[in-house]
Length: 320
Image (tube, rainbow, N blue to C red):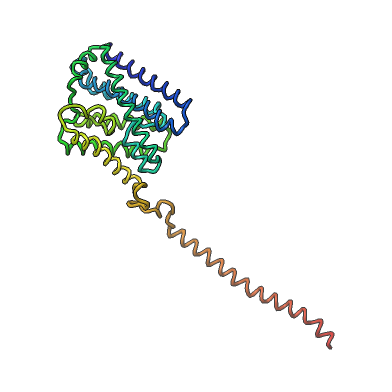
Protein backbone atom coordinates (compact mmCIF):
# COMPACT_ATOMS: atom_id res chain seq x y z
CA UNK A 1 0.00 0.00 0.00
CA UNK A 2 2.93 2.34 0.70
CA UNK A 3 4.10 1.88 -2.90
CA UNK A 4 0.68 2.92 -4.22
CA UNK A 5 0.68 6.00 -1.98
CA UNK A 6 4.07 7.06 -3.37
CA UNK A 7 2.72 6.47 -6.87
CA UNK A 8 -0.26 8.75 -6.24
CA UNK A 9 2.05 11.36 -4.68
CA UNK A 10 4.16 11.27 -7.88
CA UNK A 11 1.06 11.89 -9.99
CA UNK A 12 -0.02 14.82 -7.81
CA UNK A 13 3.47 16.34 -7.78
CA UNK A 14 3.83 16.04 -11.56
CA UNK A 15 0.47 17.73 -12.16
CA UNK A 16 1.33 20.51 -9.67
CA UNK A 17 4.75 21.21 -11.24
CA UNK A 18 3.32 21.27 -14.78
CA UNK A 19 0.51 23.55 -13.65
CA UNK A 20 3.11 25.90 -12.17
CA UNK A 21 4.96 25.90 -15.52
CA UNK A 22 1.74 26.80 -17.33
CA UNK A 23 0.99 29.62 -14.90
CA UNK A 24 4.48 31.12 -15.33
CA UNK A 25 4.43 30.76 -19.13
CA UNK A 26 0.97 32.31 -19.45
CA UNK A 27 2.15 35.30 -17.44
CA UNK A 28 5.13 36.11 -19.66
CA UNK A 29 4.28 34.77 -23.14
CA UNK A 30 1.77 35.99 -25.77
CA UNK A 31 -1.40 33.92 -25.84
CA UNK A 32 -0.87 32.30 -29.27
CA UNK A 33 2.77 31.44 -28.56
CA UNK A 34 1.78 30.06 -25.15
CA UNK A 35 -0.92 27.80 -26.61
CA UNK A 36 1.35 26.42 -29.36
CA UNK A 37 4.49 25.83 -27.29
CA UNK A 38 4.50 26.15 -23.50
CA UNK A 39 1.02 24.75 -22.89
CA UNK A 40 1.59 21.76 -25.19
CA UNK A 41 5.06 21.13 -23.75
CA UNK A 42 3.84 21.16 -20.13
CA UNK A 43 0.79 19.02 -20.96
CA UNK A 44 2.86 16.48 -22.91
CA UNK A 45 5.37 16.27 -20.06
CA UNK A 46 2.53 15.71 -17.59
CA UNK A 47 0.82 13.09 -19.76
CA UNK A 48 3.97 11.13 -20.59
CA UNK A 49 5.38 11.11 -17.03
CA UNK A 50 2.08 9.85 -15.60
CA UNK A 51 1.75 7.22 -18.36
CA UNK A 52 5.30 5.94 -17.72
CA UNK A 53 4.57 5.52 -14.02
CA UNK A 54 1.22 3.90 -14.72
CA UNK A 55 2.79 1.57 -17.28
CA UNK A 56 5.26 0.46 -14.63
CA UNK A 57 2.31 -0.42 -12.39
CA UNK A 58 0.72 -2.42 -15.23
CA UNK A 59 3.90 -4.45 -15.83
CA UNK A 60 4.98 -4.98 -12.21
CA UNK A 61 1.97 -4.23 -10.03
CA UNK A 62 0.11 -7.50 -10.53
CA UNK A 63 2.86 -9.79 -9.24
CA UNK A 64 4.76 -7.16 -7.24
CA UNK A 65 1.88 -5.81 -5.17
CA UNK A 66 -1.35 -7.44 -6.30
CA UNK A 67 -2.63 -4.38 -8.17
CA UNK A 68 -4.83 -5.62 -10.99
CA UNK A 69 -6.61 -3.98 -13.94
CA UNK A 70 -9.30 -2.49 -11.68
CA UNK A 71 -6.75 -0.35 -9.82
CA UNK A 72 -4.98 0.66 -13.03
CA UNK A 73 -8.24 1.61 -14.80
CA UNK A 74 -9.42 3.65 -11.81
CA UNK A 75 -6.12 5.53 -11.67
CA UNK A 76 -6.24 6.10 -15.44
CA UNK A 77 -9.73 7.60 -15.19
CA UNK A 78 -8.71 9.92 -12.33
CA UNK A 79 -5.57 10.96 -14.20
CA UNK A 80 -7.48 11.89 -17.35
CA UNK A 81 -9.98 13.85 -15.30
CA UNK A 82 -7.04 15.79 -13.84
CA UNK A 83 -5.49 16.18 -17.31
CA UNK A 84 -8.76 17.48 -18.74
CA UNK A 85 -9.10 20.20 -16.11
CA UNK A 86 -5.43 21.29 -16.20
CA UNK A 87 -4.36 21.02 -19.86
CA UNK A 88 -5.70 24.52 -20.67
CA UNK A 89 -6.83 23.82 -24.29
CA UNK A 90 -3.72 21.73 -25.02
CA UNK A 91 -4.08 18.10 -26.10
CA UNK A 92 -0.71 16.39 -25.68
CA UNK A 93 -1.89 14.23 -28.58
CA UNK A 94 -0.44 14.60 -32.08
CA UNK A 95 -3.55 13.07 -33.69
CA UNK A 96 -5.73 15.74 -32.04
CA UNK A 97 -3.37 18.47 -33.29
CA UNK A 98 -3.63 17.05 -36.83
CA UNK A 99 -7.41 16.94 -36.48
CA UNK A 100 -7.45 20.66 -35.62
CA UNK A 101 -5.31 21.28 -38.71
CA UNK A 102 -7.72 19.32 -40.95
CA UNK A 103 -10.63 21.29 -39.47
CA UNK A 104 -8.83 24.56 -40.33
CA UNK A 105 -8.87 25.47 -36.64
CA UNK A 106 -5.08 25.61 -36.49
CA UNK A 107 -2.73 26.88 -39.24
CA UNK A 108 0.25 24.84 -40.44
CA UNK A 109 2.80 26.88 -38.46
CA UNK A 110 0.89 26.47 -35.20
CA UNK A 111 0.39 22.74 -35.80
CA UNK A 112 4.11 22.24 -36.45
CA UNK A 113 4.97 24.13 -33.27
CA UNK A 114 2.51 21.98 -31.29
CA UNK A 115 4.02 18.74 -32.60
CA UNK A 116 7.56 19.89 -31.76
CA UNK A 117 6.46 20.97 -28.28
CA UNK A 118 4.79 17.59 -27.71
CA UNK A 119 7.94 15.75 -28.73
CA UNK A 120 10.14 17.89 -26.47
CA UNK A 121 7.76 17.54 -23.53
CA UNK A 122 7.59 13.75 -23.80
CA UNK A 123 11.33 13.34 -24.19
CA UNK A 124 11.83 15.54 -21.11
CA UNK A 125 9.32 13.41 -19.20
CA UNK A 126 11.22 10.27 -20.19
CA UNK A 127 14.52 11.64 -18.84
CA UNK A 128 13.02 13.03 -15.62
CA UNK A 129 11.06 9.84 -14.88
CA UNK A 130 14.18 7.69 -15.27
CA UNK A 131 16.01 9.94 -12.79
CA UNK A 132 13.06 9.59 -10.43
CA UNK A 133 13.11 5.79 -10.75
CA UNK A 134 16.83 5.83 -9.92
CA UNK A 135 15.92 7.04 -6.42
CA UNK A 136 14.22 3.64 -5.86
CA UNK A 137 11.61 4.98 -3.45
CA UNK A 138 9.59 1.76 -3.81
CA UNK A 139 10.24 -1.86 -4.73
CA UNK A 140 8.46 -1.18 -8.01
CA UNK A 141 11.13 1.35 -8.97
CA UNK A 142 13.94 -1.02 -8.04
CA UNK A 143 12.47 -3.75 -10.26
CA UNK A 144 11.83 -1.22 -13.02
CA UNK A 145 15.50 -0.17 -13.00
CA UNK A 146 16.52 -3.80 -13.45
CA UNK A 147 14.09 -4.20 -16.36
CA UNK A 148 14.82 -0.84 -17.97
CA UNK A 149 17.62 -2.16 -20.18
CA UNK A 150 15.25 -4.35 -22.22
CA UNK A 151 11.68 -3.05 -22.33
CA UNK A 152 8.95 -5.23 -23.78
CA UNK A 153 6.86 -4.20 -26.77
CA UNK A 154 3.26 -3.12 -26.20
CA UNK A 155 2.27 -4.71 -29.53
CA UNK A 156 1.06 -8.18 -28.52
CA UNK A 157 -0.78 -9.07 -31.72
CA UNK A 158 -0.22 -9.08 -35.49
CA UNK A 159 0.52 -5.83 -37.31
CA UNK A 160 -2.76 -5.89 -39.27
CA UNK A 161 -4.79 -6.52 -36.13
CA UNK A 162 -2.80 -3.84 -34.31
CA UNK A 163 -3.57 -1.26 -37.02
CA UNK A 164 -7.26 -2.15 -36.77
CA UNK A 165 -7.32 -1.91 -32.95
CA UNK A 166 -5.48 1.43 -32.80
CA UNK A 167 -7.58 2.80 -35.66
CA UNK A 168 -10.83 1.73 -33.99
CA UNK A 169 -9.77 3.21 -30.64
CA UNK A 170 -8.81 6.49 -32.33
CA UNK A 171 -12.09 6.52 -34.27
CA UNK A 172 -14.17 6.18 -31.07
CA UNK A 173 -12.02 8.68 -29.15
CA UNK A 174 -12.13 11.38 -31.83
CA UNK A 175 -15.84 10.86 -32.45
CA UNK A 176 -16.47 11.52 -28.75
CA UNK A 177 -14.21 14.59 -28.87
CA UNK A 178 -16.08 16.02 -31.86
CA UNK A 179 -19.52 15.24 -30.46
CA UNK A 180 -18.94 16.79 -27.04
CA UNK A 181 -16.47 19.59 -27.82
CA UNK A 182 -19.13 22.31 -27.52
CA UNK A 183 -20.52 21.31 -24.11
CA UNK A 184 -19.27 22.70 -20.80
CA UNK A 185 -15.86 21.55 -19.57
CA UNK A 186 -17.22 20.10 -16.33
CA UNK A 187 -19.33 17.61 -18.35
CA UNK A 188 -16.92 17.01 -21.23
CA UNK A 189 -13.90 16.02 -19.11
CA UNK A 190 -15.52 13.01 -17.33
CA UNK A 191 -16.99 11.77 -20.63
CA UNK A 192 -13.59 11.85 -22.36
CA UNK A 193 -11.87 10.29 -19.32
CA UNK A 194 -14.43 7.48 -19.22
CA UNK A 195 -13.99 6.86 -22.96
CA UNK A 196 -10.19 6.64 -22.61
CA UNK A 197 -10.50 4.30 -19.62
CA UNK A 198 -12.93 1.95 -21.40
CA UNK A 199 -10.83 1.85 -24.57
CA UNK A 200 -7.65 1.22 -22.60
CA UNK A 201 -9.29 -1.53 -20.55
CA UNK A 202 -10.67 -3.22 -23.68
CA UNK A 203 -7.74 -2.90 -26.09
CA UNK A 204 -4.77 -2.47 -23.76
CA UNK A 205 -3.78 -6.12 -23.89
CA UNK A 206 -3.43 -5.99 -27.71
CA UNK A 207 -1.57 -2.74 -28.45
CA UNK A 208 -1.48 -0.74 -25.22
CA UNK A 209 -4.34 1.41 -26.58
CA UNK A 210 -2.27 4.56 -27.02
CA UNK A 211 -4.16 6.14 -30.01
CA UNK A 212 -1.57 8.90 -29.64
CA UNK A 213 1.34 8.62 -32.13
CA UNK A 214 3.72 10.86 -30.19
CA UNK A 215 3.11 9.08 -26.88
CA UNK A 216 3.52 5.65 -28.49
CA UNK A 217 6.75 6.75 -30.19
CA UNK A 218 8.16 7.85 -26.84
CA UNK A 219 7.07 4.80 -24.84
CA UNK A 220 7.39 1.80 -27.14
CA UNK A 221 9.27 2.52 -30.39
CA UNK A 222 12.66 1.79 -28.80
CA UNK A 223 11.52 -1.56 -27.36
CA UNK A 224 12.57 -4.83 -28.97
CA UNK A 225 10.13 -7.20 -30.64
CA UNK A 226 9.06 -5.25 -33.74
CA UNK A 227 10.64 -3.11 -36.42
CA UNK A 228 10.25 0.66 -36.76
CA UNK A 229 8.11 0.15 -39.86
CA UNK A 230 5.69 -2.10 -37.96
CA UNK A 231 5.50 0.33 -35.04
CA UNK A 232 4.85 3.21 -37.44
CA UNK A 233 2.05 1.35 -39.21
CA UNK A 234 0.29 0.44 -35.97
CA UNK A 235 0.82 3.54 -33.84
CA UNK A 236 0.95 6.30 -36.50
CA UNK A 237 -1.06 5.15 -39.52
CA UNK A 238 -3.77 3.43 -37.45
CA UNK A 239 -4.67 6.41 -35.21
CA UNK A 240 -4.43 8.93 -38.06
CA UNK A 241 -6.73 6.82 -40.26
CA UNK A 242 -9.21 6.43 -37.38
CA UNK A 243 -9.13 10.17 -36.73
CA UNK A 244 -9.72 11.04 -40.41
CA UNK A 245 -12.61 8.56 -40.63
CA UNK A 246 -14.24 9.99 -37.48
CA UNK A 247 -13.88 13.51 -38.86
CA UNK A 248 -15.36 12.50 -42.22
CA UNK A 249 -18.30 10.72 -40.58
CA UNK A 250 -19.06 13.57 -38.18
CA UNK A 251 -18.53 16.54 -40.51
CA UNK A 252 -19.47 14.92 -43.80
CA UNK A 253 -16.17 16.15 -45.24
CA UNK A 254 -12.60 17.08 -44.31
CA UNK A 255 -12.60 20.91 -44.49
CA UNK A 256 -8.93 21.19 -45.47
CA UNK A 257 -9.38 18.85 -48.46
CA UNK A 258 -13.02 19.27 -49.58
CA UNK A 259 -15.24 22.35 -49.79
CA UNK A 260 -18.55 20.57 -50.34
CA UNK A 261 -20.19 18.14 -47.95
CA UNK A 262 -19.69 14.60 -49.24
CA UNK A 263 -22.13 12.74 -46.96
CA UNK A 264 -24.88 15.05 -45.72
CA UNK A 265 -27.26 17.40 -47.52
CA UNK A 266 -26.89 21.05 -46.54
CA UNK A 267 -30.57 21.84 -47.30
CA UNK A 268 -31.81 19.72 -44.45
CA UNK A 269 -29.39 21.44 -42.14
CA UNK A 270 -30.81 24.94 -42.52
CA UNK A 271 -34.36 24.61 -43.96
CA UNK A 272 -37.29 22.74 -42.49
CA UNK A 273 -39.72 21.22 -45.03
CA UNK A 274 -43.26 22.66 -45.07
CA UNK A 275 -46.05 20.29 -44.09
CA UNK A 276 -49.17 19.80 -46.20
CA UNK A 277 -51.35 21.52 -43.62
CA UNK A 278 -49.10 24.54 -43.63
CA UNK A 279 -49.12 24.67 -47.43
CA UNK A 280 -52.94 24.42 -47.62
CA UNK A 281 -53.42 27.17 -45.04
CA UNK A 282 -51.02 29.40 -46.95
CA UNK A 283 -52.95 28.72 -50.19
CA UNK A 284 -56.29 29.59 -48.52
CA UNK A 285 -54.87 32.83 -47.17
CA UNK A 286 -53.63 33.85 -50.62
CA UNK A 287 -57.05 33.03 -52.19
CA UNK A 288 -58.84 35.19 -49.61
CA UNK A 289 -56.46 38.05 -50.30
CA UNK A 290 -57.09 37.82 -54.04
CA UNK A 291 -60.90 37.70 -53.63
CA UNK A 292 -60.89 40.73 -51.32
CA UNK A 293 -58.82 42.65 -53.83
CA UNK A 294 -61.28 41.76 -56.62
CA UNK A 295 -64.25 42.92 -54.50
CA UNK A 296 -62.62 46.25 -53.75
CA UNK A 297 -61.86 46.99 -57.40
CA UNK A 298 -65.56 47.44 -58.58
CA UNK A 299 -66.38 49.56 -55.52
CA UNK A 300 -63.47 51.81 -56.34
CA UNK A 301 -64.69 52.17 -59.95
CA UNK A 302 -68.25 52.99 -58.81
CA UNK A 303 -66.97 55.68 -56.49
CA UNK A 304 -64.94 57.23 -59.26
CA UNK A 305 -68.01 57.31 -61.59
CA UNK A 306 -70.19 58.99 -58.95
CA UNK A 307 -67.57 61.68 -58.34
CA UNK A 308 -67.35 62.33 -62.06
CA UNK A 309 -71.15 62.70 -62.33
CA UNK A 310 -71.23 65.07 -59.36
CA UNK A 311 -68.55 67.17 -61.00
CA UNK A 312 -70.42 67.48 -64.31
CA UNK A 313 -73.86 68.49 -62.86
CA UNK A 314 -73.05 72.17 -62.15
CA UNK A 315 -71.58 72.67 -65.58
CA UNK A 316 -74.75 71.30 -67.21
CA UNK A 317 -76.97 73.71 -65.19
CA UNK A 318 -74.82 76.68 -66.13
CA UNK A 319 -74.97 75.82 -69.77
CA UNK A 320 -78.81 75.52 -69.50
